[in-house]
Image (tube, rainbow, N blue to C red; front, side):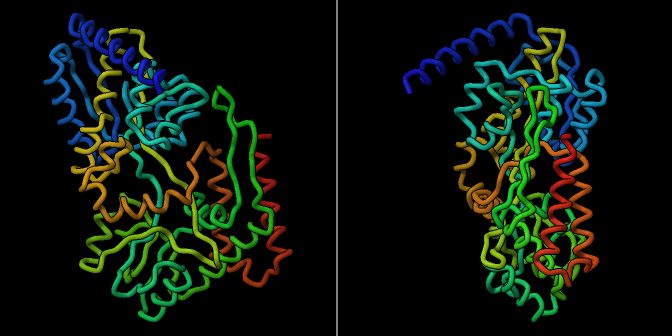
Length: 401
């Protein structure tokens, strides 16, 4: 602890020195930021607040453009030089971005501050090896159950949820032909499917045991869920019709409240066939692109640090509902009272962080789900289902060979 305090004090001294240097030189050029479309207006105002508080950057021109986390990484990797100076992205893209040289390492003084102020999952998500490459912005990427509490009386088991939906002539939505949502069953049953990458970000190993007793258990659970007359394959609350329950994430909270009205409720995913559904958890973060201009590097670093600070994370939550990774912001009364974030926080204890996956994996998982939806496995026994999973597993491993 004494060593940590000493490091923090040293970092604070360095930050003070850096702030003095910035005040002397500043930066008056252009900085481009990519953020999700629904946070553009918020980010523009936050940038103005930053400039007002840091007069050395008053002459800096900042362009905030709507490029979401799902597209930013691919665009940056394709053209690092033409990409944004600061950009939001999801944790599973970290290795790819590092390998492409699209991320500036977070300097030690800022890394210490990030580690002290954010939850452990978020800190781990922005770190590869011993190096921190980005600033945590949220701890809110994952999925759970939205439901109509007037219809769904017992959300603790999927069997009960389906029974309530069937009895009311309502629908249960879950996207089982998605490699993201599909892991709820496999990971929940005790299976693993992850990929290791080297320091360059290249995938070097697949760790998986889908072809197992647990894998068959997960596959059978999905097959049985898909047989329910209440089941609908999908995850968008906005597109759901006649729904009483939907598996989705915090981005759908507003739509879920509108759909269910006074009966709006949310909780962790239920159990199915005796095991707790799991899945992926994730984080959003801000990265800074390497620059040749030291003054611009300093400006971008300072701005990215500000945009992910506790106060700004809390303000972003109030503006668009994004769940903070900052420990102090997480203790805010409004954050803790948020129904969707509370459900996600409960669910995340059963999830594993989403790492990097090859593009082929997502297509492979979609194919498995499509076959379930087409009733191809309905009459297969356990041995045949194990063979299906063995083919799946062998294919997943082949992506790194």
